[in-house]
Amino acid sequence: MNPVIERARAARYAAARVSLTPLLVRAGIFLTTLVGLALAYPSEMLLGRPLLALVVVALLPAVGPRRVWPTFAALVTVGGWLVATDGYGRPIALWRLLAVAAVLYLTHTLCALAAVLPYDAVVDPDVIVRWLARAGAVLLGTFVLGVLLVELAGVGGDAGSQVATVAGLLVAVAVTALLGWLLRRR
Image (cartoon, rainbow, N blue to C red; front, side):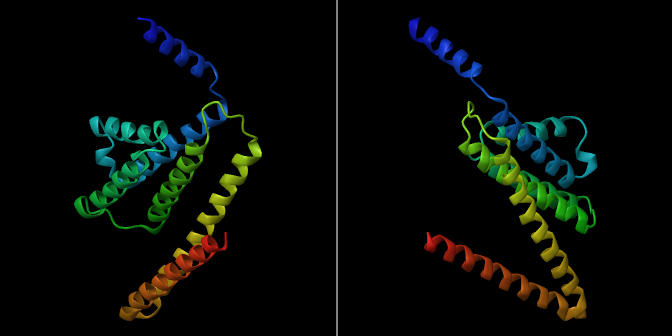
């Protein structure tokens, strides 16, 4: 009985040391995941039991950001997008696509932050602001580039989508090369 009492005391002591910032980051993970799921899935599936299942899916990465749950939630979100477009015939709208991509990225970056923050961490608010500002800059650049590529796809008529595909691949290769160079530079 003694080990059980000791574990209960340790759990109570750890719960008393939890600080606000890591909890807010995890709440942000939950909210961004839930918004992404709501944007991706058709409105017909957001009623009743499917909504409860989606809330559980959104809760999993907030509870375990170091585990497989962020990837699972992202795959469920993408699956919802595919169900909505193919199964329910929802047209692909640029705003919805950008919004789903944005919340997927925000969920990913918040999970990365939560993975390195212990529950009892005392964090300067500037750290969180800089983290989110960097994420916002990445999203802004991605949106601008994405909209330009979509516009480029419509320029050449039937051949425009090939041009946009090749341009997108070149951008992906350039970003990969840049990241590889930055990694080797360290």
